[in-house]
Image 1 (cartoon, rainbow over the protein chains, first blue to last red):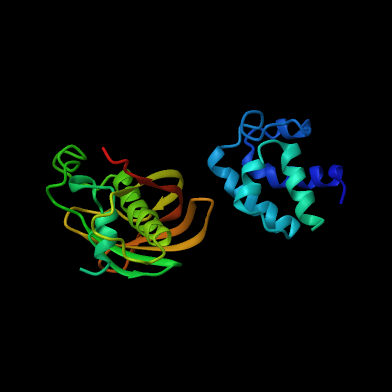
Image 2 (cartoon, each protein chain N blue to C red):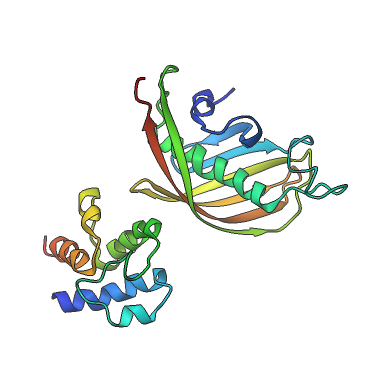
Length: 83
Length: 155
């Protein structure tokens, strides 16, 4: 799965937690989940749990702390998928 | 009293402690009880001559038993803490989605049952129900919050 494919899937994971759906249309690797998408930081745990189910991976605490931007999420997800 | 050490670790005191008894507790589920005190501070004004338990208080009772008691148990992994442990638990509610089904009146004994959805990265999410003494549903909802353990620094 390449980065573009992961990004498209990631949009679906982020959708329920993003109030303004318009913001999701133009996300790129630099988009910050909390600052740009306005996702409630307490819901980042739910984003991670949903991502685990979506990609059938396990994300540990150290990896979860890196998931701040769309790009860093893709880094973690692609690394776990290709393990 | 059963689960005494949990009561010692609860951060709520006196008029804002809404846990009276814990009758069941494991890593997935808690059942706890609270009897609404007729002299509680909120009845005088909510409402004058017609005391009804505020929804905010019912929510608080569900959160204290359903999230905080279970959360303390999960963090301490069921192992009893030494009595002189200076640590404190600092709970922060992050979201509540609750429906009220029935009024709760002063003097009633309420039973709260909470089933764990998940506990990860310090966040606990639970399905919580509250019943009255007749076994009728008072409220139910999905609660989530964070529980941090704060260790007091020596003075």
